[in-house]
Image 1 (spheres, rainbow, N blue to C red):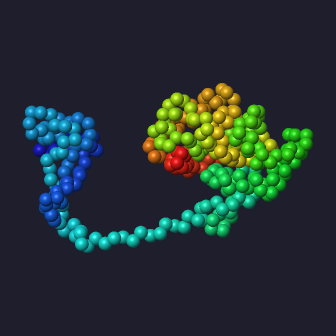
Image 2 (image 1 turned 180 degrees about the vertical axis):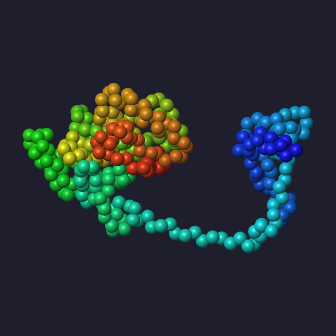
Image 3 (image 1 turned 90 degrees about the vertical axis):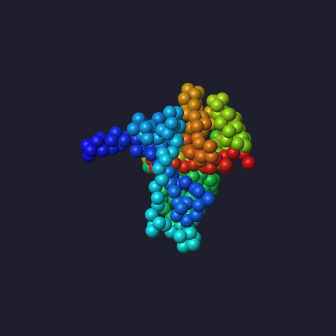
Length: 313
């Protein structure tokens, strides 16, 4: 008898994952009388051992039919309704300390930024840690401090023999040309690292997906992109900077036609198959191995924006 019981348990073991216990609400009963649960089969076609116990007629039972088993609850362990008190929620930890208040400096080898945080502290951070703070980084390169830093890198390029004379590179002017897709601007981009969708003309995600099924975004879809300009590449390393409000029509001008055909398909698919209402993650243009060759170490946490902020309001 003990052997038969053991054999039965061994046969049932693979199917235990499909058995679930669910509460049954019985409004006509009160107190412990109404505290009932049912054991349900939640998997594929039940094995013969269970099927025989479930059948009450010659007709096969449906897959989700409940086993007619009621498990009484231990009344001594029930908490009276009037004894349940609301729990006061603790205030969330102050997130101010994680907000980038200002970017105040830059280093290369690898690319790092001097970040002034919301709580008043400051630290050098790899660029991969602040990809969600593109506006703050753009403000830095547009400031006098950022312009002096770009002149320093330009002079270094001359001393390294990369150029014959110092280049007059200003972030605001250069970023505007990239965003507008000025012909030939792609030659001034040494490396396109990441792309974040920030806006689309579509009001709903369903309509947005219909657009993507055509194999492309709307021409006026907008992105924030992270690139390495040729003008900021030195022997010691390079600088990754953001360019805001880049149109989809301009994005394709930053890479070769062959590269665009391959990567654009991946870009479209990443957004096409997002779950409804899911956040929109950043898209990495190259492989992680290629990024490392440029001194870019990806952060373990993927940056993203909300779908609501992307859809046209």
